[in-house]
Image 1 (cartoon, rainbow, N blue to C red):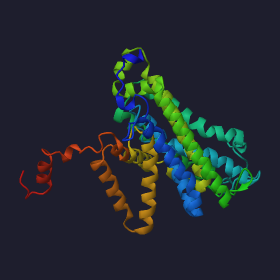
Image 2 (tube, helix red, strand yellow):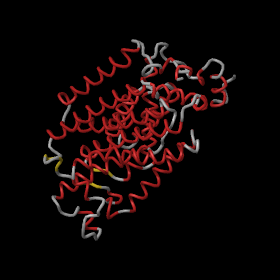
Image 3 (cartoon, one colour):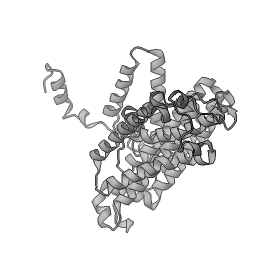
Image 4 (tube, rainbow, N blue to C red):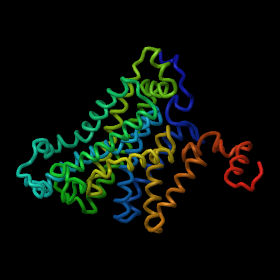
Length: 380
């Protein structure tokens, strides 16, 4: 039955074919990126390695959003929530390990005398680590079931996820004795018995993050090339046609949304020990919008595009803030605007077979009218 559905050539297998063809765009380019990232710790300082490790967690997060936005057509503006939940699950384990059986400091300051019952299982790695995936996936699955069975799509789904980000961040801020409030959970000293701030530990965490990113890419590439992935693309292009062909779009959307949220939670779990803190700030609306910007700049609907976009945008953010501490936000804003206006298909769109496409607003018939509106003295 899937053969009767219209599947665009650009996604018949894997991501959009580049100027070297399908094999190069799907496997060669990611392999070159992977090789460069593997060699990075040999060339960079400990500080830069830790910074790049943080960017790699953002790349995993961007891939998770690209899976549902680029291939299933669902824009989530609340993915920071799932990232934060995974980060909090790991932070609870790290905080209990660092406390050495004692009550965490922020709980003591808040007046608690014993460990809350829902914190107790997180002292065990075999429980805490799987929860970094399970908790975000369960929340997304429950929300998705309620939303998608009501056939809520498009901008309304985006607004619901944005409201989720606002609600959860406010909730975590208000639960100071259990979540650390605005400050979040910080001051970890060890991870599995090793000093968390030592260069060796940070290097191991870097390579663990890189391995997770590679596995995430392979998982998503396999999924997109499968029958399920083709259904996602067909559903993105014409959901009613998929429904009339005998499939259940609500179930498909719920499954991929839960998977995407779980991947985002794993990214948050890797972020926490490398940065040393997780707070409600990472679960708010602004970080969730930034995730969408990474995907848009890199190239929506191309797995490698999400990785490139996350690393480049955050690298530019870091570099500009160091060089121009007073006005770096303006440069970053211009970068975003320019990328959307001049390269609407993102960075990876430049590597298509046909190369760069002139945006519609730059077309020969529309540009004079645009200039006349902006510059009154210019004739049409």
